[in-house]
Image (cartoon, rainbow, N blue to C red):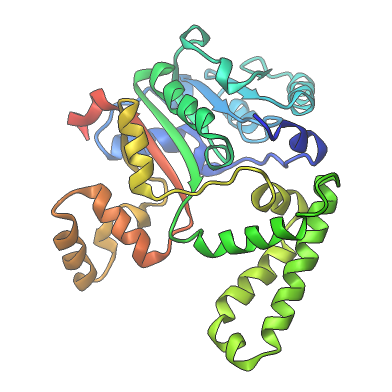
Amino acid sequence: MENKNTYNELLYKSNPFHYTAPALLEAYGRLYGLTPKDSRKARVLELGSSFGGNIISQALYNPEAEFIGVDLTAEQVKKGNEVIEKIGLQNIKLIEKNILDINEDFGKFDYIIVHGVFSWVPEVVKEKILKICNENLTEEGIAYISYNTYPGWKEPDKIREMMIYANKYFPEISLGDKNQRGKSFISIVAEQMKSYEDISKKKGDFIREIEEVVNMADYYVAHEYLEHFNNPLYLNEFVDLLKKENLQYVSDVSLRLSIVSVYNDSTIEKLNQLSQGDHVIKEQCLDFILDTKFRRSLVCKQSQLEKL
């Protein structure tokens, strides 16, 4: 994975994400008719766990469950394991490992969490992540995968391209310096856009989006906008990738993206006409309407399809 050095250079903050909690994944699974393992006693794997900021708190609240975190960055893993030791947790460990080196011998897990990884790795790693979600997931298990998605990421793509261009002639500078150059460049562009009334009117939303990026935390912007890989994809493309690995798309964690009954009657009617009952088409159409830019998908094995 090419971006190992940049994560060592500018550490990505690892926070707890409540929407990845196994208890929530279990509840969603049951809502859709699946029969996942009791999350309080489950085996949980997180790929790209950084220093464990997400799963340490989960391990703390679920003493009978077992948590394994895998990350490529030695420094993050070392820091995380020091924290785990200080707290005295026995049910969690972080392992420095390349995702590509995980195989069936690594064991089976009831829940697999992949947050903030999928869009930011090369194709071969994406394929491997889905392979792990098949081979290392128990039959009734649930995987969670988040990723940047189109059409919402079309505008941020333009900002990313500007920031990358700002650094085209400075390949040797550090990621932190690239980030500062990129932010300065886009803020000048936004400022100049605002100075022309017609452009300011027409591209007001885009200008505001640039200004938001300028004000975001450096570690986040650097890894989101300046990494070699950031490949958003449409929901339907993600589902096609799942099918190749005998996996089944279940729902988004944000039910607003999956359950159409919350919309007005006209929208429901049109979505039903367009989708002919296919829930992936329905959700893809919703993404076009809502301009969705980030998805947090729940996935199960193809063998569970009749329960859904």
